[in-house]
Figure 1: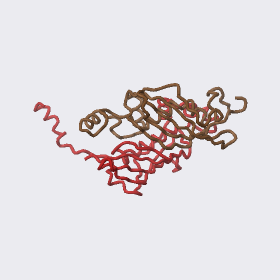
Figure 2: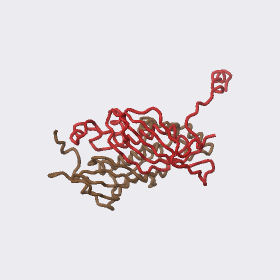
Figure 3: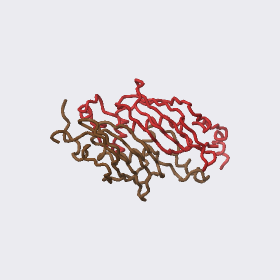
Length: 165
Length: 163
């Protein structure tokens, strides 16, 4: 690298990584995480998700049809609700490794365009991996709520986590 | 209220599903970076392994990752597979009730192609105008590898009078 390039990149050597996420040790059984941000799901979000994934039931993209079934607005695709709640929880829970499974997922009530979701999780179990020293399978129960604090979804999620050194 | 007729098919009501039946759905889909990364960001999944190829290449070179480029976020694999099955198994759904036993069994990369299969696991005649159906969805890639499996229960409309 030229002296000039090295001079330009002096900040790289000085920089301290602004870390994200939690370590395996942070997941004590019973610990509760109130996840960041929240998310208002607008019509554009729902149209984009529904069409990109071909979720072809008009209740998710045809307003008169949704009204004919007794809804006041277009229904948000349940898998968008699921993915949004997962997304809100990723930084707290699962930057350390991949999905092992999702179980016991319940959609408690419909979410409508314009609703705002928030998410909360509790650590249900942690099992250190025998096959991979330094890794653990952690299981959480995650719940998603709308702006009226009504629960719209719950599920159990397990991931295989490895602490980065 | 105006009745919405003729907008959906006539062969996917509660009565049409038999326990034990297995279907292959008509369309496959190559999962491109376009929708995989778009949906990952749309739902604010901040795990870099789904959108940083360089990070994954570096991790792979160091023996810390099985693949050398970004992995498709599992929620996208689940959603695209169920999407491929949805015209047939979701068009008459009144309400999605839940999912269970969801497993992601192999890596899906930008450029992988998914095909969807569905098995009817159970039926429960719960209401005059609808009933519960539990489906098992399978996602299979271009090499016939099972990459996703999961059960989904929904309230499916019965055939309306005269339909």
